[in-house]
Length: 161
Image 1 (cartoon, rainbow, N blue to C red):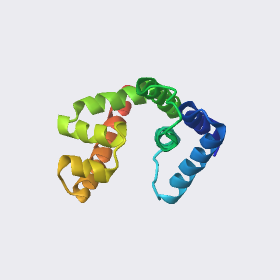
Image 2 (cartoon, one colour; image 1 turned 60 degrees about the horizontal axis):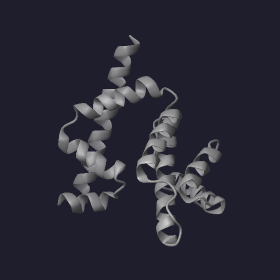
Image 3 (spheres, rainbow, N blue to C red; image 1 turned 180 degrees about the vertical axis):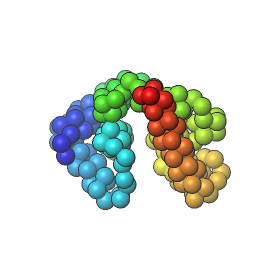
Image 4 (tube, rainbow, N blue to C red; image 1 turned 120 degrees about the vertical axis):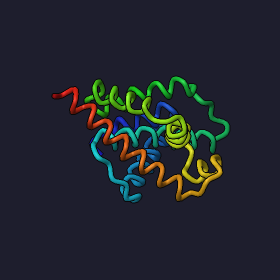
């Protein structure tokens, strides 16, 4: 709740409607509280919140049909990266460690992460696209999350020591 204005602003940049942005913030807050998801850090939570607010805003625009899209996806993507970096606080070393770890992943793993998080597809859609079972997608994502966390922690420990 301490970042209410920032998350609402992220939604407003997409929808350009203060009331809709407030509704989107409330939906994001509700999702964060009811999904039972656990976040390792405030930065991780804020990154998730910004991405979720953006996607909710795009969904809201699609439902409106008459509302023009104000910013193209490239600009929204750049803003999303900037917000994520600012939310992490340690954007420099942590962000670089994440980029390095992502580059070290096999192409199939990067593709899975891209489909799920960057393209914004639900796990069900990713499973259908890949022709695999939903449970397999969940397991692969879980292993990738653990692997990335370990990789990032290792890289940060090496630069700190």
